[in-house]
Image (cartoon, rainbow over all chains, first blue to last red; front, side, top):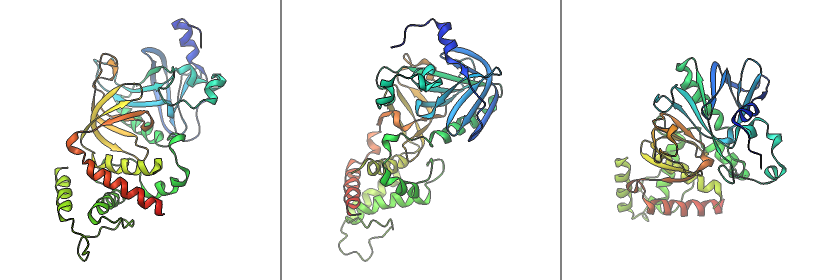
Length: 227
Length: 103
């Protein structure tokens, strides 16, 4: 367990020497102040990359965040909650751990600890850009990169190809995608016909003498209309 | 059924809930209520217009607008009861599991 540090010493531990990220850079936001638990780290640049989120000041000091540790991120525009419009991040664990993962004890490396499990704290991080109009783009870039880092323990290697072919990214902004519509039709079909066809085709009950589930179909139609 | 099969059904079901209000409980006990904007195959969730059900504990979360929640930190998703046809879901889950065993 780490010893108790003064606030100032803790703040100094947060920042380490970092290079400017060059790979997979999705978004760069200069003139961005970083706050860690309400402590300003000063002005710097935020780099949202495929692999990591890095903030770095002009002296080359900064910190990096791994996507699996970013439990939640959001655009905060409520000045009552925080005096600046910002990109808010809820980070699992202490920032000093994220800045240099090699400092983790061997116990942490061996044990698979999920988010918020064990004694990990939650750290609130805020990025305040001078250009408040950039917040939505920062949010979207971070969302896109988060999708690149699903949990290792959640993936099923056999099903990876199936999922990759079957689904597209974030759904819901418009109407359902064709895949999504086919999926839902598939689910509907399983219930309507009572014998999973498995091919995703929507088959109306015409010609299927065994299908006596007229009532089920009507019930489902009602639920659909309610949506 | 495997985790992947379970997630396919959850993914489809959550997609059908887009536009509805749900409550998500995170593994750190924080509960967030919001309008479901979108969901992806990893069950990452995007909310709009969120509120925090325990503002005393997490005051800085108040009145955040767009919010992206990493799927792996979600413990529970509380659904409005009238949006949840459990019979439909049970039947669909059974059929999907049976089909996947045949493949």
